[in-house]
Amino acid sequence: MVRSVTSFGRSGVSDWLLQRVSGVILLAYFLCIGSALVGGVDYLSWRDMFEGTGMRVFTLLAILSLAAHAWIGMWAVSTDYMTERLMGKKGNVLRIAFQIACSLVIFVYVIWGVQILWG
Picture 1 (cartoon, rainbow, N blue to C red):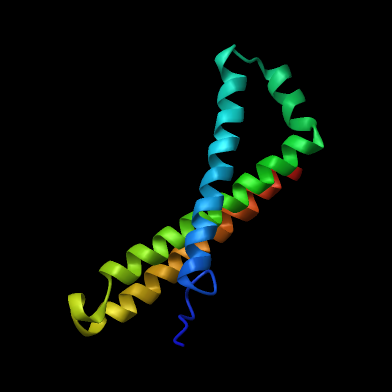
Picture 2: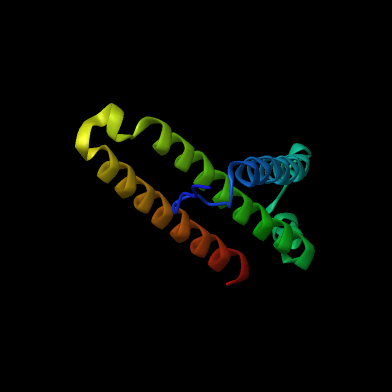
């Protein structure tokens, strides 16, 4: 069985499942935030909502889900459209550079989000 070193999950099925689960978590999170915004929100109620441990954990789960969802999506796009067959000999180098850049940006955003959330 051939395994890709740059894939986020262990197989296509686990990547597919992680993509769907992370999408459901993100939907639930944004519905939760959206329902809080519908009635109008001021700074104090927003701060009180995010001071609770439950909301912080839910937000952390949403940040990690967004990172996993983004990585799998970017990996799929890069492996589909940045190949040696389509782009010549430099296609693999460009794909790997793109994947490294995406992983660094996602890593920085996760660290930044955790710092904002728990800092």
